[in-house]
Length: 266
Image 1 (cartoon, rainbow, N blue to C red):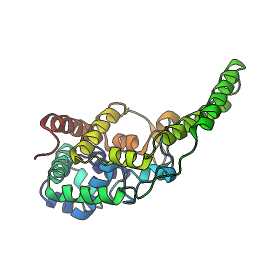
Image 2 (image 1 turned 45 degrees about the vertical axis):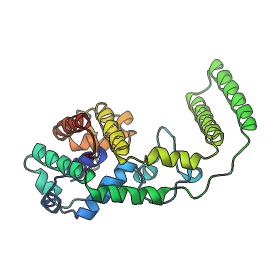
Image 3 (image 1 turned 180 degrees about the horizontal axis):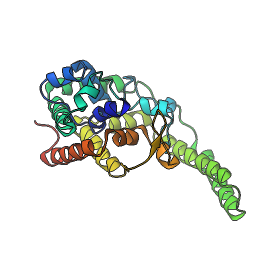
Image 4 (image 1 turned 45 degrees about the horizontal axis):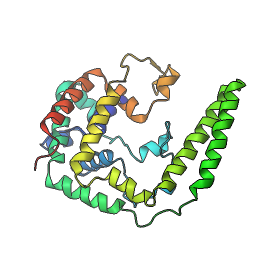
């Protein structure tokens, strides 16, 4: 059943599509409101609708953010009737879903919802700035220590921990080099032109889908990947995998064509 649910999500990840007619949504057991909320949330990567504050964003910038942190940016809508609908022509269903999302993205309702979400995410304050002189001095010490650790062939886990600390220190320096980091993040995540946000997510999907091994082996009730590298992949990567090669072939072709045509009509 999870495999069928994620077939729907592939379109949502890529911000692809359902169908212009609401009957496809009803057929899947979704309300139009739920479908559209997930499309918007997955496009902007935010379901909280709160003012952006980089100082409290969990796992931000990490290579492997926690599952909870990922779910704040990406969610799978529960479609009760998807297993039945997907038991037939999966390619046709995927195309219909893609058409729906494209239609919604080009609607006045989407533009209004995007602007509302953008205003809700607009930062109301900025974090206190830290003197980066001390931070840079600390970073230099950490980098020197890392070089020493590698020279003495210290355990890989210790080296990885040090590298993580260095990455966090660099992020802290970057944040404190910008006097308005919340505004900067807001402008990046919510560009004034919503088509830029959609384009970014479509391109992200194509890039990520190209890395998915659809022949990867899984085991157990929850289909855990036997390859630990795959098991550590993001929720989006796993959703693409579980949707299947057939669905993604249709989805990828649709996305490429959409990008060529232009994202949103004037």
